[in-house]
Image: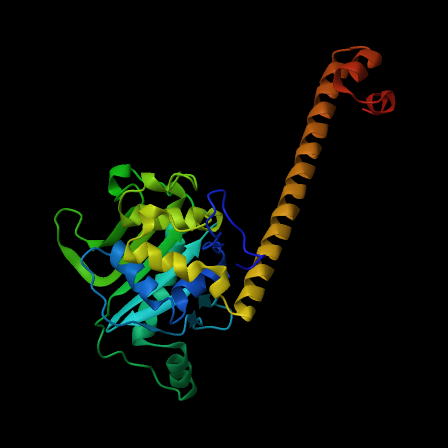
Amino acid sequence: MDTQTQLTSSGQEVRPFANLMMDVAFKIAFGKELGKQNMIDLLECLLPGKHITQLEYVDKEHPGFFVSEKRSIFDLQCKSGDESFVVEMQVKKKSFFKDRVLFYSSFLLRDQLLTPLEEIKALTEGRKKEIKDYHLKPVYMVSIVDYALDHQDDAALEQGLVSRYSLRNEQADEQMSDALHFVFYEIGRMKYKPNEAKKCKGILEKVAFIFRNGSKLTGIPAEFEDDITNRLLNTMEKERFTPEERRRYELELLEDLEKNSELEAAREEGLEKGIEKERMTIARNLKSADIPPETIAQATGLTMEQVKAL
């Protein structure tokens, strides 16, 4: 056996897995030809009743109609027949996230009928671009979020993790259009620790567990020997990455560590400034109450010079 091989306490070979919530690993696991079956498995789990026989990846960049308009670049976009799927990973919590997803869905609907290039060409030729058929093909916006979204009732969540939305009549089970669907996979609600894999029930919980804990595992848990989770974990093995993929993954890890370090330093600096401001406020209040400067300095930790300068 290779002397460099790491072993667990039970003598098994350690199998290091990538962090699936890192952009590089996410796109390797779901965006390459190697990960195409993982994508099909994920979509079929999140969309009950959906059966996908073939899948193709398409351009994930959608420019705006105007130069000043923000372009949209999705994490992953693919098609199966007439249906389009956008799969996005969101690690940091954002305000009005559902509205943001709704806004970006408009790019896919709009491009079905009129692309920016067609609009520019029509304007250049001095004519109006006529849309003859407004029939829209189904678009599925799948958001994997590492936190809990707000819900009026958590009963709306399947297995406590997935919520789905579509355009339907408020009074009856009647569909307005099949053009737009939203799926939110709230993996941030998965609280099991790396040694608690046996607690997972069902594929949705297992996949969420892999997202949250995969990089901390030393091997594939016995409970994860089903085709879907076993295949996903095998794809995540860092030893299977190409040298270029490994380099990009390690670089992203380093950038993430540096960013977190900077944020922590800024947070600590902000706390120190906040504490100092609070001490000055207390000192001013004590001074206005004619408390002796020596007592104020002793109570607040300020110097006599600082107290006298107030």
